[in-house]
Image (tube, rainbow, N blue to C red; front, side, top):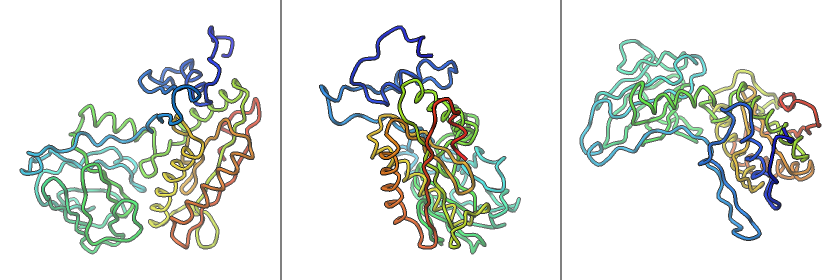
Length: 331
């Protein structure tokens, strides 16, 4: 691929800038970045504060306008199922909110039927409140949880774009309807990314991390993969996480990515994916093994303080080798 470049790469570009050029040459069109999603700067002449490319996120649609906040409109808002441990087939489905008071549960007689084993038969009541929704738990077995909180809640206030978890099912408040362009994009996102953590699922992770490996070989720079895992009280990694471990994984994974990108001064989002129930990896291209180890140690130290006392975040760093497929580094 190196011989295909018919121009000189300007001197002084960062690793991320050169990587964008490399990605633009990918034979797979789906892996090429769109021009509007590329960032370049010259740190020595223009700025010391590069603009980072935003990470891909699940778009909840436009926020409800003033009229929708004052007057209830049936179906103007919906709950998008983003994650369901025991019913992956319902991920991406929409539950239109067609009344100001709705019952949610696993039973078929509920207004919003969620066929997920950890959702109680009559799990919660939803009440409309001027554009937002109040979710009242009805004494469910597995609880109702606000986003980024480890405690069961008797009530959760859900704003536009916010998420709530009932049992082991997560839902996001959105303003688009079934089969709309926004709904199709949301389903594409959830086919590519894990709805709990936002990390790439294995199939897409392997493609993305292989590309990082090819780039590292082409640019003749180091590559490492940081493997993270969440350990329980006995220092073991569970294959069947508890709800507490699920919530902690979501928080840990997102914070690990944020800190890694910040410490590496990344222009482009890090390649990261979920590799197991409580495991995920982050690709680090450019820094030496010692620099990467220092970053990982800082990340673990900061994220550990955000976790419940019974859980521990562990990390190992695996060095890539020239010619070795990068996907072999993730497990």
